[in-house]
Image (cartoon, rainbow, N blue to C red; front, side):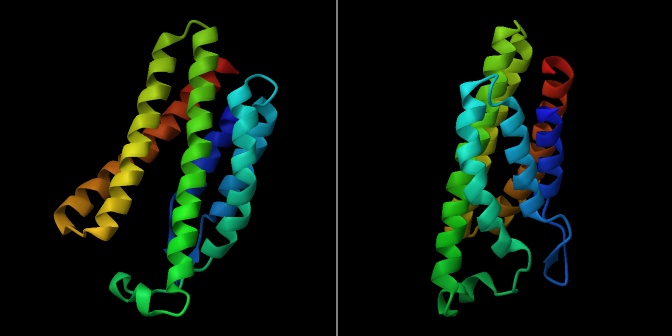
Length: 174
């Protein structure tokens, strides 16, 4: 059941907004991540360690439920712009550490079950997730429109690949 929680958590990570409100709030995603990690924590040390990262993400995601539209080039001029940037960086780092633990946990569980295909997928999906997130931050600093568009498309594909990984883990490991 924990892997299904991860699947649904990734669905809630999609950023779909109407009037600044997140229709699929990230807070629900991180509660689902925590619940899945909690269910699987006795099976694998990576899942137990990942739980620690889900808790601050639950609280950090509260600030993302409603988003005020501020043009990127004006963020530094807004009184809370520095705080927004810092929160975004902290959120991304903690999120990366949690997803790392989830992918490593899946890889380890797959290896223990001699499912080397799933192990390899978990490791590759983690690397892609890391690269895409780093590329998005680099492109925020050095905005190159065409490259940003390409990375955004790769990011969406990456989320679908992560959904597939969670579904595959659910089917093969639970």
